[in-house]
Structure formats: C-alpha cells, structure tokens
Image (cartoon, rainbow, N blue to C red; front, side, top):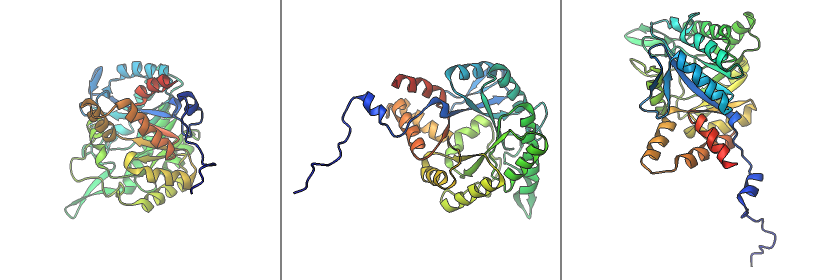
Amino acid sequence: MLDLTHRPRRLRSTETIRRMVRETHLDVHQLIYPLFVSENISGRFDIASMPGVAQLSLSALKDEAESIAQLGITAVLLFGIPEQKDEHASQAYAENGIVQRAICTIKQAAPNLVVITDVCLCEYTSHGHCGVVAKEGGHYQVLNDASVELLVKTAVSHARAGADIVAPSDMMDGRVGAIRTALDSHGFTNVLIMSYASKFCSAFYGPFREAAESAPQFGDRRTYQMDPANALEALREVALDVEEGTDLIIVKPGLPYLDILWRVKERFERPTAVYNVSGEYAMVKAAARMGWLDEKRAVIEMMTGFRRAGADMIITYWAKDLTAWLREQW
C-alpha cells in the first residue's frame, strides 16, 4: 500500500494564513500606469476599444497625475500625440513638444511620480512607422541608422524636460548604446534606460494604435519587431540591449510571452517589466461586459501570473483599479 503518513498537506486554512504563506505577491508599487496626452483635444477623450482609458489634454493630465499619486501608484509611462506629424517625426524631439510639456506638467502636479517616456517615432511620423522610411526599388524600407539619430534626439529632449527614465520602443539596432552615450555626454547620467528589449510583432497592439493614433499607413512592422515564433532571437535582442547599457528590460506583450519573460529574468537577472498590452486589456474588458468572467478575479490572476513568471514591474491599464482591489484583499 501507498504510505501517506508523511505526505505534505495542502493548505486548507483561513484566508489570512493562506496570504501569509503565499509565494507571489502583488503590490501597487510594482505597477506602471500608461498615459496618453494629446494636443488635439481639450479635457478627456475616451478610447472606444479600451473602456476606462482616455486621451488627455495637458490640463486634464494635471488632475490625472495628482489622482494617480494619491492612489499610491509610483510610476507612469507617457505617450504623446502631436497636432502635426511629418516624415521625420520632428515633434518627437521638439523642445516644446507635447511629451516635453507633459513631463513638466506631471512634475509640477506630482513631483514624486516617476516619469517614464516612450521613445519612439510612430506617433509623430505621417506614415506611422517607428523610424525614417525611404522607398527603394518600389518598396518602403525603414532606415535603421537615420532612425537612431532621431531617437537619440528624442531621448535627450525628454531628459532635458525632466524625465526620470526613457524607454526606447522602436526596436532599431544600436539605439540603446547611442542613447546612453548621448545622455551621458549631455550630463544626464542619472536618467535610466528602460528598453523594450523583447518586443514582438503582435496582433494584441490594435487598441493601442487607436489610443496613440499610430497605426502604420502602409505595410507593417515585421521587419523591425520580432517574429512571435522566435524565443532565442528574443534572448539575443535582450543580450544586446544589456551589453549596450540598458538599466531595465521590458517584455511585450505579456500573456502570450510568459515563457520569454521567465527566461529573460532567469538569464539576465535585471529589473524586468512586462507590458500587459491593449489587446489583452480589451479582450478581458469585453468578456467581463458580457458577463463571461469576473473582471477583478481575472485581472488579479493575470497579474499574479506575470509576477510568478518573473516580472518585477507590470505596465498595465488596470493600475488604478488594481490599487483599490489590492486594498480590498487586506
């Protein structure tokens, strides 16, 4: 017979004891809240595909920053939508650009909020791609080195405006090293780089492109974002960013890439964030609206999964709701 005398017992105790011995914990300080600030609106403009998320004017951003800080959220990730776009993304690095002014607004309203800025060109280019585009032989091509030059200018302008962390999301080769060199040479040695080191060409970005008004006008981003089938490539990309000097790593998206998140954290042992992207947000919102699942339970389970897979930080549109839900648990 099977001897069960010394078989470990599964915990069947009170909820308080289960929490005491829980292996993985969620905390509000692990959350980063994305913000979309636009020159094209006054007040707030709700994003239809992302219930609860809105574009904000600078005046609305002030109130939002104060509210976020009061909730206990410690960091925001800032995206800008300019009034004017052109082929060279000139508003991305303009001294008086929308993100540059938004950084100042947040710092005045909530000085202790950590401001992370998305460094990319897609919101600012007339064609919606993440770099400079040229037509060669009847085909459009994104020019890596020319794009890096503009990304460097953008990162430095964000640092000059007061950003604490710059987050290049373009996936151009060599941009982390170039940005680090430029930041240091301009005296911004304390500004950190949080690179989208592992960013896949995903179907889950659709609602974001509505929110950021950044959908490509032709083609797609497969030539510079990663193939969802490639895990080893993701690890090579992260290794290159680490070698070039990134301080923090982002894996994006989240749910379909938990294996990548785990491997990145285990191999590189760097502070690692996961981006719980717009499509992941929208599909849970839609299912909850239909009554097919309990939103709060589903979201907490999802976030716990990100933490269990190795995420030190979670970029999520649920950050504000999560602060309330986590307090209810205790």
